[in-house]
Amino acid sequence: MTLKLPIYMDYHATTPVDPRVLEVMLPYFSQVFGNASSIDHIFGARAHEAVEKARGQVASTLNARPEEIIFTSGATESDNIALLGAAERLASKGDHIITCVTEHKAILDTAKHLEMMGKSVTYLPVDKYGMVDPADVEEAITDRTILISIMAANNEIGTIAPLKEIGKVAKEHGVLFHTDAAQAVGHTPIDVKEMGIDLLSLSGHKAYGPKGIGALYIKGANPKGKVSPVMFGGGHERGIRSGTYNVPGIVGLGKALEIAEKEMEAENARFREWTKLMFEAFQESIEGVILNGHPEKRLAHNLNVCFPGIESKALMHLLRHDIAVSAGSACTTMSVEPSHVLKAIGLSDREIYSAVRFGLGRQNNEEEIKHCINKVISSAKRLRKFNT
Ligand SMILES: *Cc1c(COP(=O)(O)O)cnc(C)c1O
Image 1 (cartoon, rainbow, N blue to C red):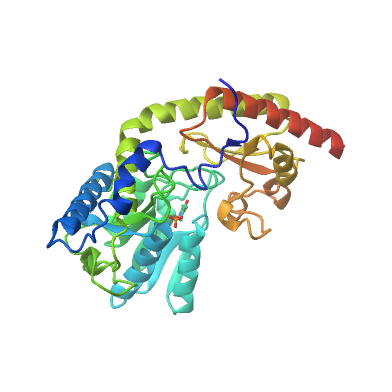
Image 2 (cartoon, protein in one colour; image 1 turned 180 degrees about the vertical axis):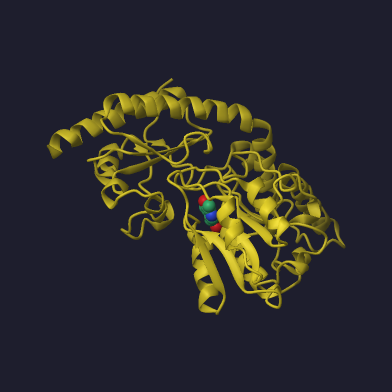
């Protein structure tokens, strides 16, 4: 096999649409173009049927019921509906939200906005692995607490949260539990019933589906009892999310999650082997390499490491024709601020500037992994020599 360069290894930022997903989406752009709400004729009815099939596929991956799935434009919108919607809906019950310092900006900035609106937010710390302690969650609960929002898997370091334990705490105190599962759904098993999750955000493009589509799971028969809408219009999606259906996107999301559910286990076994291979090779040849995130409770396709004394931006520059990786969070590349996640797990600014995130994916192969290992090691050695 010939190696095709550059190799994409930034699957936490986004994933390509799986060809099997694209194939099922295509007819819904121009052939089956009906408005899924216009079910009085065959054009709309066929689109409606496709949307409902996808709703079933999404529900099935989460062990939810189809009517508990609300389609949105992505995890950012789902996070906004969950936090803003719950804060408004439950305002008579309380005004306090619990979240954590390593969340995605879609949660942190929404929480900041709520603080500006007079709500109170607790940002829980994490341990050196990026793990939230369920005991800390419990301790932070007051009689004004209405919502706990803790991400399922971290987009930078891959740490998987103790969702079941947090869900248990939430239930015992009668507080809603939301999780931003954009990085988890399609990558690690999620069961909303077993984990006691009330609200869950997911995204298509993090799991080989299209961009601009996502969903919010809302437990139970009455979504409006948990969240108020933040957008108004035709009353689609049980009044929670108005707007004409993105039918090709929805069909693609359904198919992507159906594929992930079937292939996740085998795929993860491969990723675990490759990340282990990479880390051990780096450790052997580059002095002082540090693994960021939890050694076991992590996304199989994530490898986040510090190469002390080597600036990740310089390393990435040397790698630019060979491997596409990320230094810190892709969503904050506009700012030169050190990653808030790596800061939260206790790394110094110097260590943070040496961190590289490898996000492996479905299209990588063994040859690419070997090329990556060789290229990273030779580039790191070049930079080390230059520095000393
Ligand atoms: C990518 C991501 C988001 C944003 O999802 P979009 O669908 O791109 O809006 C939110 N949270 C996490 C953890 C993510 O990784």
